[in-house]
Amino acid sequence: MSEPVSAYRVLIVDDHSVVRAGLRHLLAEVFDPVEIVEANGLAALEALLDEGMRFSFAVVDLYLPDFLGQDRLDRIRRRLEPAPVVAFTMSESKSDLRAALAAGLRGYIPKSTHDEVIIGILRMIQVGGTYFPYELLARDAEAERGPAPIPAAAVPIAGDIGQAEAGEGESGAALTERQMEIMDLLARGHSNQQIGDLLGLNLNTVKGHLSRIFRQLGVESRTQAILKYQRMRGG
Image (cartoon, rainbow, N blue to C red; front, side, top):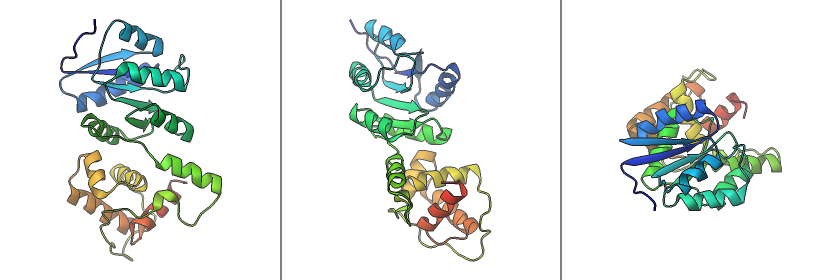
């Protein structure tokens, strides 16, 4: 018989102990109180499920030694219901993102994502949201079509703060880690409010950061900022 879940019981499935340790720290910021259960592969996960263990939330690496593809992902997601299942992976490929969507996962987080952004994403999924970095699909589509004047990720989005003061900035100036987090989210198509929610900042703080970024980059619009940031990052 399956046992009831008390408080938050969160599952981490990853074959690297360092990754599991890092996730424990991040998950403790989101769920309180929390019981963390770890599995180093799908065989260990299925053993836990066979014992009747239930979970409130699950974070699963897509590339495990015993991972067998789409069919196994579908099976694991169904067995973990009703817990939200989130992919946490090194992969930024279009096919893996689509596989996660097709399997009914609630989120897809590349391991390259900043810690504070991961916390914001997990909080959003915890309360019923979803997160998929669709710019991965757009980026691959652009690569297949060849160079274009404006990348898909740079389409202007809602919540524009308007034009920043131009001509006084230090074009090409290095950005702080916080500013890069904001620009990463801006390039992914998030609005100011969404950026604030993901980073734990109020709306005015986000607007202030963007104004300073615009001055530093010597640009006047969100689209210009994204294009220049992508060039700075080699994108």
